[in-house]
Image (cartoon, rainbow, N blue to C red; front, side, top):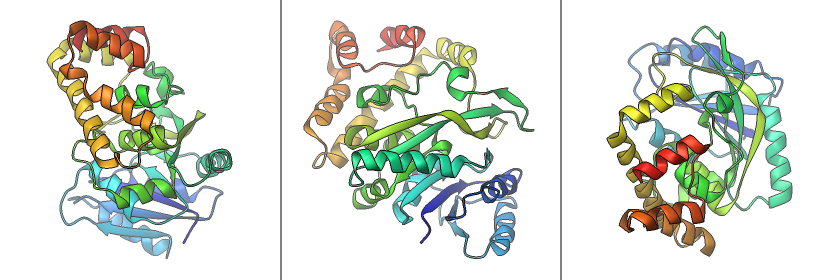
Length: 309
């Protein structure tokens, strides 16, 4: 068993998957294996991966899902299945910098030394946003989107995910929790669910450096759209934003129901109050958001939140 398992979720990724895998092998770090969970690709993704599997015997492991799981469940189930000291999540269309694995692993080991290994830990980094040809759009995903990646306490994470999934490393304890407890029905995204695990029962650490080239193209499921685009989308879709907020309450309820027996009491209180916001009156909702810190990044986002809550 290698020290680091890199988990990739693939789906119709023939255009970029070879370059992504080759960038991982270009790393100076050698003690890793790649586990690819394909979600029913109809193009030549499987053929490309099979070819690379032969070039790197014992280092690439391909699994084809019997049914399409969707990216969130595919990733979460994969983390539950793979056994390794540390697990990194990987998209099929980015390019990793050579020092990504080593830099993230060093931070994780420092975190374990401080916190211990018997709790869920997550490390994430910034990302360089590029176009489909790897031309730079921004040095920082977080500055480009006006997000604050340093507010990773549970209250903030319940309202706004900070983790970019393709930059994340988790320790073995995260996989243990996902394996021992039911898969969620209402997880918004796999990285958000992992953020909840780490912020409620362990620790999250942020590396303020772009460790990969985060490719933006027409096939992206989730990507960096920019702050102005974010504002235009929010203003044009108030109903959609209210529905998204309700999905966060459902996610919190789901999380509490699954992990109730092992959650610290203070984390239970924070999650329970968050999930109960829809039942509160007009002023109580807003006071609860402010009092408990269920907030987003920046004044504009929070003013919008106060409008729609």
